[in-house]
Image (cartoon, rainbow, N blue to C red):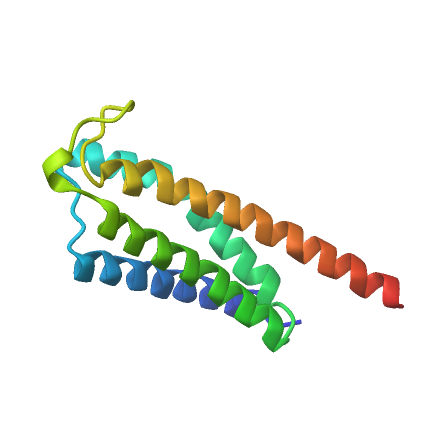
Length: 142
């Protein structure tokens, strides 16, 4: 088992790298949220807080043991779905038919403020479940 302080620091750095890669993809794809202001930033902080905390917790769980399979599962499970979702959102979005959805969000706002955090929340819960099943299987071997 690694030193907890080092593991937490690495979790925070890896989560920051993960977020930076997503922000870079959002920038490259030209996805924008309409009407940035302090209220929108406050909403984003509140909506993304739990998924980001779960990403850090899953990093600590998956990287606690030095097994490459767990590391690959964590990176792929956190990068691939977000990249696919953002790419599909960009391709399927039609700016000429932009109208407010049921939450009063316009354009990409719904995808970035509601759907993406929900996808990551469900994904992180699934990763916790996978870890629990793997751990149970490892304990059954001994």
